Length: 127
Image (cartoon, rainbow, N blue to C red; front, side, top):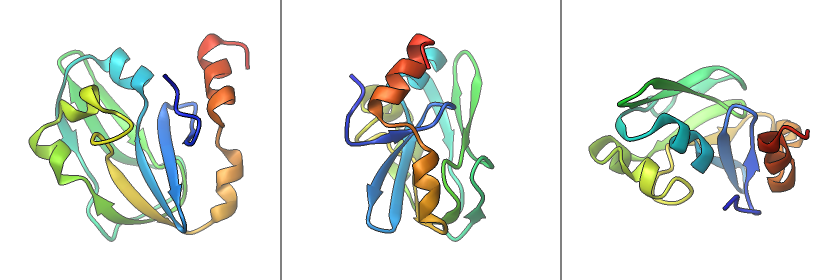
């Protein structure tokens, strides 16, 4: 259930690397913990963010979850589909439910992200 081609944070964001871009979403685990997602707040294109900074929010019937920037960079795209259909984050968190894309400012930060095995170990509490 944890895609092997992505990188992960301990805050339950995933990252798909595409050259100098990083597409970001929340993990299946995170959307499951939140429950039915009813609203997504995305950052404006052009916003510059630092790793760890709050950049988006996902609201469910149970809670509001902050989405932190897993890497530093500039927001170059957002997914308008999740604004109109926030449940895409529940239905397809690793595909159509992506949130935003960054142009990485410091590609070396990727080394600080977990691979799939590391994220799985983190979820099991063995990391």
